[in-house]
Image (cartoon, rainbow, N blue to C red; front, side, top):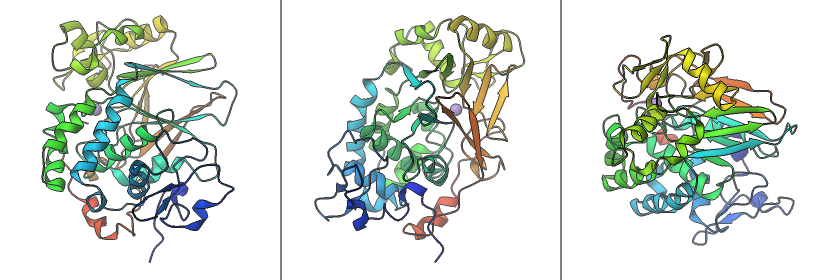
Length: 386
Ligand SMILES: [Mn+2]
């Protein structure tokens, strides 16, 4: 049998019941499932989980990373539990996350991730595989669009929420335009919830969580400052701080026009070769020109704006004279785009670099029977959509 392509940090040691996971040389407590006595190695090397060692969240993380079929170990009730536990964790964060790299510390490294769109294997293998066994803990910033299009949106969002619950200071999530009920009702996530779990109420629970996901982040790294979001700018957004005045959970509800427009832009806008702003071809958000990006960066003291939201063939793309960087982390998007996926690495020495990749190898075991299911079932986009 071919070797299972688990991410490096979960290979071998992460396998349930492996006695090495209890090695006293490990600084981390090992999660133990009280019912089965099964041990699970924590995801990070030294970061202490914010949940008890016997929390099922640690077990769910480990089993998802072993490519086990989510339907074999998670029930509707346990999915609902993940939603309920993640609500206060995400709600406690501000609209704009304040993140940093320790100046001069090469080992303090961020992994920045663009659209995933239900491509679970690529998330597990390429993205989370950046956290290698024996290596310093990394921090992960995800720029949204976890669900829809790809076949495993439920698995992707469940794993990310479990990681957020267990490691709230290591895993950070920003909301994408697909983390919204009108969109994810149409482009696959609703259908996936219904077919995998025979229930649509869990789709509502996930949407309650989507409504409280932060909208943006600012990362400071020495003298450098970068703004992160899913889509882009809007005419009413002058200062980053302005975003913190929006009641984010009211998006699509009772927000006034200007607040709603700011969130619309953050979730939906795209850089364009126009001057100023135009309403976006997508029907939501704005096309924003290079002059608007340049002015926004200057006004807010930013090195550049890093966003996701558009498929780019190399997995990353600079536009607007390097004022805007687009990241896209779903390779061969929708099984037909032939694009590379990419992630951005930033450490305390300020040496941003990209890791590009093709589609992850299909898992062989223990989710072997599921491999065929994982390859198919995409919701195809219209040209230019993501
Ligand atoms: Mn998007």
